[in-house]
Image 1: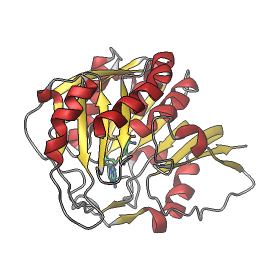
Image 2: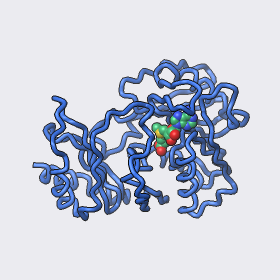
Image 3: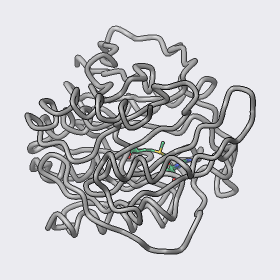
Length: 304
Ligand SMILES: C[S@@+](CC[C@H](N)C(=O)[O-])C[C@H]1O[C@@H](n2cnc3c(N)ncnc32)[C@H](O)[C@@H]1O
């Protein structure tokens, strides 16, 4: 049953993958309710997320791995199963392993280090593929701020497109180092750019808030209560203040992209006459995602 569905999905994605030279994509997302897995392909490897059954039982997701490997023509050792984990904000970014099993993948003009073993996330969020391209396409000569930057994939796109200066801001040294390694992988001169370890939410204010920018990427977590932070963060409650603060850093005619994966998100930020707001989610949610609510994305432009 799973093999047939995977074959069907691969067939559906074939032309799109060829046209856009897609190496990393989502091939299965709980298409069959009795097989509640998400399967993402990264080059010649695949990661299998077990999402658990509606009745709370665990099932045996490992039994599907040989079928997945066989159908996707991937070596067994390159099929990585992520057991089901109930996440809290605290656990979200913690390490799961120490294999340091990093490998390179290509997306668009860029290359990225990915690790399917040691962390809950892989280093490259596939649902932001289109948004990364959009940011890259408008970055030439621009000053770009990438907030909650994670492994700096938006920054790589901007820098490769010829951004004058890219600021990559995250509070995790692990991810900032990963972002630096992504710059090196792409032969980007990191000396022109800034990597800043900061709690973006810290009142008082972080270093970047004394600057202004032409493009801002704002992709915060839904919840965060890391011990490094002064207070817990909740996207629904806190996005109004966050958007007020970050839009104030935009240069005239600048653009801020705000994205959230919170499924119940309601935008409560009020647009003032200086700004224009567009919900661009239908353009940023990618073709390979069956789940069209994977994220919501807004483009906020400063008019003057
Ligand atoms: C949702 S991911 C961002 C994904 C990223 N924009 C991308 O598409 O690759 C969350 C990131 O936010 C960072 N983070 C969470 N809370 C933060 C805070 N208060 N200040 C700075 N970074 C934070 C985490 O370290 C993690 O790298």
